Each structure stands twice: as structure tokens, then as C-alpha cells.
Length: 296
Length: 118
Image (cartoon, rainbow over all chains, first blue to last red; front, side, top):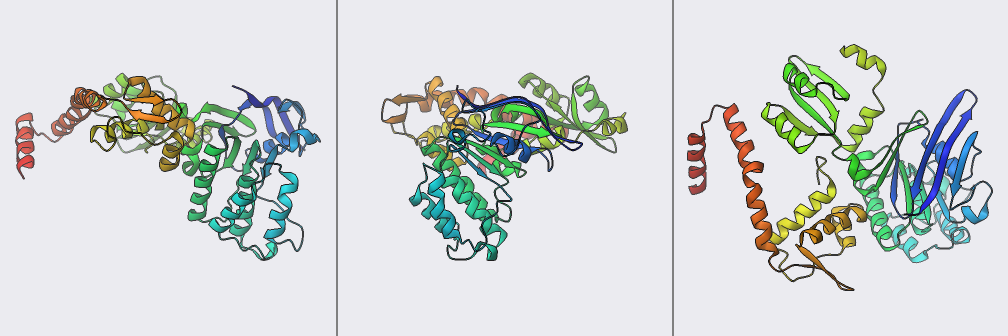
């Protein structure tokens, strides 16, 4: 498999804040990646570094085999859709779509037109006068219709309603299937996108804490519920991701259970509940030392 | 699609169901990977993994340049496989729940007979 992004030891410090902390990972060609994490975890900074919009403090970045910084031969293959995209004063949506082909050699005007109809975007309205969701739709359309070999969507759908988000997911999947490319989707709506992802990167306080195939992650954690002694006996010395207790009942989230262990648990009168990707990430990015102490 | 098991395994199971109940008849073409991906809203690589699993088991086979077809005998083979797993997957949990409520296996059998004639 070819990697189109290679990052090693990447660090970005702003005055006193380490936004990206010694990140090492790679991004394979023609896969859909989820870049997930809490607000302020470093997702946007990381994408800005990967697209040459900021300078690294330390570490190596290679995109399509080269440094992306001020490198037109790399950047012309990248489409970066940001939550905070600004447009020139007095721009209307039609101006955006008219100028997009100048930057994206794979631009598909017919596809853009179809998406404009799907999202019911008013082409002649000034962007200043548009709703937040309509501005987001412009970005989503540009990101999809540009068909760039490497496309970043950074929280692309602020203000988009549930119907429009579903339209985005459906169009993304269908077009990706027809025109495979690498997509990095940064979002906090993890449950909504989890089935679309092939690979998951989770960043927390600037560090990459999960870099795993989405299918491997799914089902990698289970919540065991039952009476406290039974749960404790079953959990034993396993790594505990999360623990809740109410009265005599305990609910403990642990990693990796074999089929035999599942049977044992059921036989011991315990209930097993699946842990969604979103719950798993919440558990992994939310467990502080203090919470562990509170249990002990 | 639920969260408890890998999506590709759930897709494979869904296709198996369709073969067992005859919705996907033997020697007919099944949807393409991209069609499965779009319909179930899953990543095409995941869909491919699920379909590949059924190809490896011999339930589906590939006709080069045309697509994927249900193999002859797949319906009977899958039905046998499901029957073999039936006790562990359905009867055992039923007995566990019954035991919890103090229902004896005899009472359970009686319930099943009644429900069946109802």
C-alpha cells in the first residue's frame, strides 16, 4: 500500500501551548480517514501543517513524497475545506464555483451542479447574507466536486441540518466509490460518520492516541454490567477504560474479549453491551488519573 | 448495522440471510461492492471485506468482468451452517433467561408448543 502522507515526530508549539506533540503516523492512498478528537485537541493545527499553511516547530512532513510548505506541485493535489473558510466581500456562491476550476484540475462542474441542487443552494445570494448551513454547503460542494487526490474536511458541516449531512455522507460515499481518493474527515459527530471510515486517527492534547483500522476498533471494547462482586471477579486485572457504579451494580468498560470469554461472562450472569466508536473515544480521551483514584 | 460486531461480518450475515430465504437466488447476480456500500452507508473497503468472506466460504463466486453470483448449493450449505449454530446462539440464551425467571425447560417447551399453535 502506498502512503501519501508520512509524518514523523511532528510538533507544533504556540507560545506556551503544544498543539501537536510528537505525532508520527502515515495516511494510505485512497482511504477515508477519520481524524477525531475533542475541541482543541489539535485537529485543525495538524491539518494546517499537512497542507503547508503553517510551519512545524519540529519533525518531518511528507505529502506525495515532498514537503507541502510553499510547494505548488503538492498543494495542487490538495483540497482543504475548513469550518472557518472566508470568502471575499460581496462574493456570491456562483463566484466560488466559477473560480474553483482554476485551482482544481479534476473539478467536475456537472457534479457541482447536481450538488448545488441537492443542497438547494441559492447561487445568486451574497455569501454574507447566507445562513451558516448554506455557507457550509458551499465548502462541502467544493470539497466533493474538486475530486482532489487528497481532500481534507475540517468540521465541514457547521449549521447543516441532519438531512443535508446525510446528503453529504451519501454523495461522498458514492463519489468516492466511483473516484477513489484519500479523504481525511475531521469531525466530532463520530457516530454519524463511523461506518464511512476505513481508518481512524484520534488526537488528544496534541498526541495521536489511536491509529487503527476502523473495523479493528469496532468491537474492541465491551461494557460488562452486573453485580459488583461478579463484575470485579470477571474484570480481574484487565485494563479498565471506564467504570460506573450504582448501588450494588457495576458497569465496567474493558478492551478485547474473546468469544469464550463472552460465553463465560454470560454464564456468570453478566450482561455485555457493545461500545460504539464514539463511546470508545470518549472513554479513551476522558479518563484522568483523578477519576481512577475516585474509584479506588 | 449495530456497533457490537464488525460491519463486514454483519454485511456478510445479511447477504447470507437473503440467500437462505431465497431473495438472492442461486446463480443470480448480487449487487456490486459499491451498491452494497451505498445501500448500507458503509465504506466500500468494508463492503469488499464482507463479500470476500462469502467468496472464501464458497457462497458467492466471481465471474470475471461481470460481477458476483450466488453459488449453486449455497442456500442448503448456509442453512446447515445456521442450524448448527442455532442451539448456541438462540437456545442457550433462552435457557439462561428462563432459568433466571424460574421457568423450567419443561414449562419452556410447553410455551413454545402453545406459541406455535397460536
